[in-house]
Length: 299
Image (cartoon, rainbow, N blue to C red; front, side, top):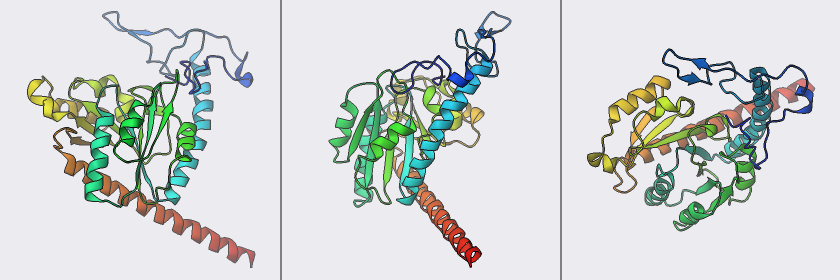
């Protein structure tokens, strides 16, 4: 859990609690749950994490403090994106799932289907600008965010990057998160949805091994399906595992190389753009009604 694992986004450790939380209770390390065969389960307690020298209650309070501050920034990002009617998607996966290749192919496919649609990318990695350079080669604007020791993007990073992108009115913003199936699950960036990308080279049991990520995602893309003839990967079992942790998750089977499944992916993006636009219209109408009510109350 990265709230207490030491990656604060700026690379500084956050194992020390805030001053108002210090010296309020004796510090004890959590004991793991032990199965009949001797397996150790450190995520079975109330905090679902164990940090040496930190009690579960203290870990929970630190998480609430850090994620609460992030949520305010995420809500600000979301309001800005809604005002511009931008669909923002947070792409999450393990390293090597093919996110960047899929993004490049998606940008090219969107350009063919909707040439006037603004598309931009925020790229998250620990170091280098390799992925942002690949995106820029398609002609789409991209901002690289290097997190240093951090294992995820947070809302402040995305807000800073968003301010450096050109206007995206009624467009699409893809946020390619750091390759990690753990920490990004809990961090809201202001996106409309998380999209979990799972390569067929990874194994169909990933949704069970990393349930928080797939529970947080609205869509799972099973990527690199062109390799299925060469692999022992059970697609239906993978989908069943994903729906075991998230019964409402949608699933698409895609190959960035062969473009298999791309029409379905582009259709899903179009539907999500319409959903985002409808929500923006509802929010604008509600705000206008609130303003009218205030005017009547002032009379």
